[in-house]
Length: 380
Image 1: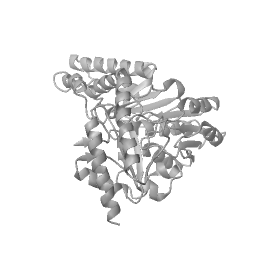
Image 2: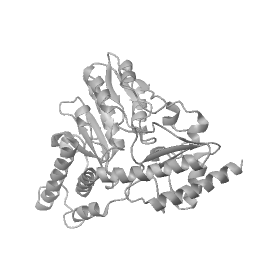
Image 3: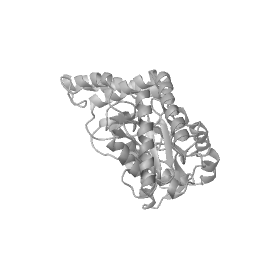
Image 4: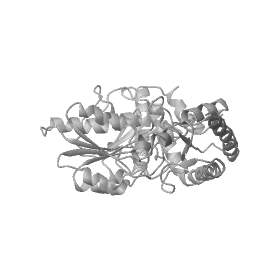
């Protein structure tokens, strides 16, 4: 298989697995238990939290382990809204970019049912959400804003620093979804009030992530239970996964320069050949200000799903957008928010490269893709 869907998930790095295995086997104690086995697991969690916090650029007490980016986003948005209600201020106003992951968009829609007002801010046709558009959307009762660090469908990088400054000046809680940029770009804890990451995006274990929340933030927990995560998130913590996340994040950050250069080279070779050799193709999103792995391309006269299926039959894994939106009948909400028409949005395919991909895989994919597009267009 040629795997070109690294924005959806990445394979577990063997070095990360080796670090995790002792806490799946001999050191399997519950981190909350008071006996020796529990203390061993708890110490590993403390070390993992410290390492994660150091990389994020924050205090260890500001890092909470969660199940991934979806829980992180839900916790930030709904937790801030819950604190706002209990503060006796009534219902507030939420700002969410129109290109956010469904975790934030659907959470905002949930809050609408409880009386919160929501403004969805559109990007420009390059896929960039401007700080001015965020500032314009802020009201006197705005309590929360979410603009991701880079989009999961197009890979376009957002002006996080500037948006954070706008929110700080107006006293608005700013959440930054960093799922696609962790291990690729520096994590912007200094510019936001909260951020979330998922370890399976940087060769760590699935079903595990981390949520940074700035000390002093007004936010309430969503998952009640025991005193895990300092009482903020109930439920037995997976010590092995915590160790895996920290190890994977450290490895990704330490090797980011080398990996980014290699991956961008593969991506650029692919994009240049596709645009030059297949007529009626369009790279979606800003051509420069994007993550090294991402190539989102539309193919005139094709349905992206049909291209996906033909590539899959030839052993090539790609996607038409976020894995969390797979199976959706409507066109990509990201591309439509950028102003693209339905035909261009529905003909889009996302190719995302990783550190294990090779030049030979890229060249083979181009040839198979050319035949697939030709077959689809010839059938019309």
